[in-house]
Length: 436
Image 1 (spheres, rainbow, N blue to C red):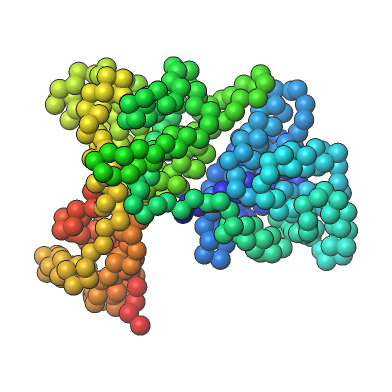
Image 2: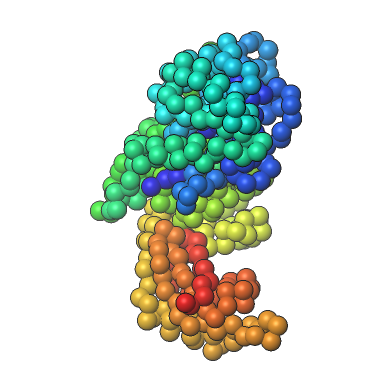
């Protein structure tokens, strides 16, 4: 089940970015007492009572024809469209404004769960003044103070209460869900069509042509798959769409619903910073990953060129060293046949379980080969290791003192586990615990 997406929405200067920073635990959004400072959506992972979710900060919704206001409104529209739950922030000191009522009308049309939070309620006396906000039509308003962190817990309780009832697709255990992510015009839609052998998705040289989320089931070699093309946005009127800004949120939603993520790189234009940022979300989500180098037909496709490009990928994506690399051309279908077997392999490894006794034999052999480190005269003792989860494979190492497990030795253990059991295409996680 994917992480839910929560958008913080409201007119400018009601404290959205301050609340965002409180919820994610660090100062990410720019906070300034000037309307319109947050012009783009900002994304982060947040957690409340062990429930993780993706949080979006938005520029304020404000009606008007000025280019900045139009773009801010469009950004907020995208966030509302992609969110599962919306936190609607209003200013308790100013009461209901005409702009709040306009935002409320927009949220009514979204048909999304909305939690109304009245910000800047800094003292108990002000709580009696929030009842006018019932008239906005979103039920009980939650008095909060983003500056002082008051009332956020009650607000978040309400937010996460919606997660269980959301139509949040749980993937069929026998079906492999995989998504294609990457910057605009890297060839995602062309690759979807090539895999499905039909013109399922509109293909254009114009970046951002894909406007709607597309899930397409198919079967190959007796295995069921669902391919998830990157979700898009409907263009409204003559509003200019800066497609580069939307790719991260599209990728987030696709990633969370996937078992395997194909991160596409354009062989012709090479690797850019945005490629690394988008791929990083798949890694952080713990998904199986395949790096697909598309448009390989435009490159001198000999072994030497392939080796050179692979070295560049490994240099730019050191955090994806477990990911296999597939070179292909969606246009000519050259090497296309190598892709689906890699998807199936990555999915199998992502759900692989290792027997505890065999795992401990491998760990003990590793320790015999490379003795555990010491710190301040105290040696790390590995007592027992077990696998506790899949998707991704997760291992707990019980030790005498978790602080003695240096990241370099943890990396050594990971490499030994990979050598013994494979796990190609999937990250694995290792946690040290003190044996009680």
